[in-house]
Picture: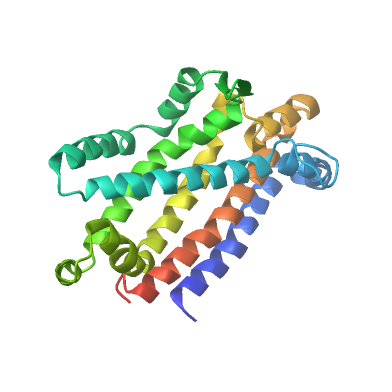
Length: 267
C-alpha cells in the first residue's frame, strides 16, 4: 500500500474517530442527545437553511467563496507571473514589489482592508451594483492567493530548460507565443500540485470571512449556538472542523500523489 493511501485512510478514519472521542469525553451520558441536536442542525450548518434544495449561507458559502477566489486569483496570478518573468525591469520590478507585498500580508488584514476600501455599491453602465460582504471577502482572499499563484507560475516556467526558449526564438516565435505554445503546456503538470495545495490553503482560509459579516459556516454556527445554547458549542465547532477536514484533506493527498507522478518530490 502506497504512503499516500495509508495517509488517506488514516486521516479519513482516524480524525473522525478522534473527534467522536472528544465529543464523548465532553458530553458523557448526554452524547446521544447532543448528537441528535447536532443532526437536526446539520442542514443549517451546511446550507444556512433547513429547506432542501436551497442555500443562504453555511458551509456551501465557504465552498463558493473558495471557487470564485481561486478563479480570480488564477487569472490575476498568471498575469502577474508573466510580469515577473519579463525581461524589462520596468515591468518586472513593480511586479516583484506587488507580489512580495501581497504574499507577506496577513489574510485577515487584507480582508478587513477590502471590507472598508471597497464601496458598498458601484455604478456599472448606469446601474447600481451592490458589493455584498461575500463579494468583498472573495476579493480579499483572492489578493494574497494571486501572489502565491504568480510565484508558482514563475517557478514552473523557470523549470523548463532555457534551450527551449532559444530554439523557439530561432524559429521566429515571439516571447508570448513561446509561453503559450511551448513553455506553459510543459509547466502545467509541474504547477498543478502546488496550485492544488494553494487551493486547499485558500479553502481553509475561508473561515476568516466570518469577520466580514458573510453568512459562512462559522457565522451560522454562532447563530445556532446563540439559539440552542452554549452547551452545544463544542459539538458544533468540532462538526465544523470535520467539514473543513473532509473537504481539504483529499485535496492535500491528491496533490502529494501528483507530486510523485511529476517527480517533484523524491520517491
